[in-house]
Image (cartoon, rainbow, N blue to C red; front, side, top):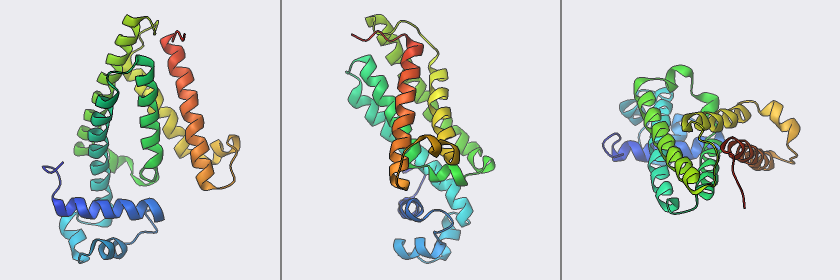
Length: 209
């Protein structure tokens, strides 16, 4: 992480992420970020170029942190049963996508697909697919799973289903009981996770005891 971002950049990005998560991109000004980060407004231009470009850096930073955190997380569950590992991996990805859902409404195709971001996302996807492949093979060998679907297809299902729900709230909220925004988010995340578990385990031919 340190090779890609300076300590000062990381400090600013952490503050920006905290404020944007609470107030949204439009509701967070450069002055808000600079005030909380205790820096001069000119520092945003110096380190990132503009508020819009800072979001591209922030997206890349978030992908890097998520990849690092996932590596640590995967290591903590590596000795668990295949079905447990798979459940936890699905839960992890869905939770991350919902937690940082404010990116999906702002980051344009152009920003999301700069070369640096494409490389960082590719590294993370490949890491996740490799772990999925290991878990699937372990499950088949132990007799817990019957089939061996391609791990990249499972990842596509997980991310695609979750992003559809995040990007189509006006549709999905019709089917999720809720009294406020927080309740909706919690229930929507739970519904997506349960649905993915059912679908993924069905594709694997999961033989529960």
